[in-house]
Amino acid sequence: MTEHPLARSQPPRSAAALLGLLLTCPAAQSAVAATDALRFRVFLNQDPIGEHSFQVGPGPNGKQIVSRASFDVKLLFVTAYRYRHESREEWRDGCLQRIRSSTDDNGTAYTVAGDKQADTLTLKVNSEARRLPDCVSTFAYWDRDFLKRPRLLNPQNGELVEVQVTPGGTERRVVQGRTVEAERYRLRADKLDITLWYTADGRWVGLESDTGKGRTLRYERI
Image 1 (cartoon, helix red, strand yellow):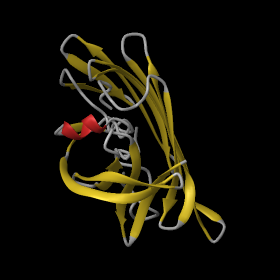
Image 2: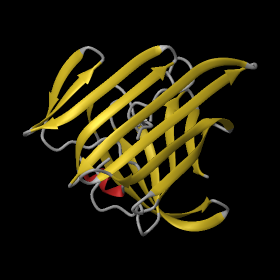
Image 3: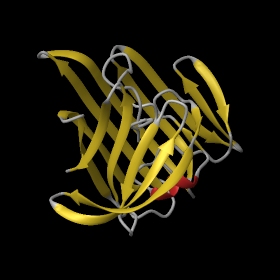
């Protein structure tokens, strides 16, 4: 998940890429319905800290995805870490066509705006311009096909991240009160260590990320 929220020195930093670390994507043929809403309750170890949602539906020329994350980590009733993220993306033929995202990472603000032009994706991250290759994918947890990509775009800060994905076999997990068979995958990058679970038909049902110092960020489907 993009470099997800939570700073390592404070409560976690990893995943949303998660985002998006958490965050939230090749749009091509996925197991997500034509219009679908995926909601996850998010925990740091056993403590609930917020939610992350993904709205996937038809767009002007393909698919449109809206991802929203809201986390508050409290220590002794005081908010020690606050994270807000929203990303709106448009996809065609499995490639990102347009992105607009805004993030408040505990007081540090990021804005990302990108548009596909000819054979490049032109990005503006805060005031810095960047140009990326023709077909780019973000951390599209909702579409299992994103695991085939060697590099992923972090929608929070516009960085293109090299990743390694390792299948981990099948195991049973409790999802929305039911026990299901789920395929496990481990996604690793320089600052990320994420485990994802999908059902045989490609539905995303879980995520965990090691954020360091004995802390685990965990997503549970609502």
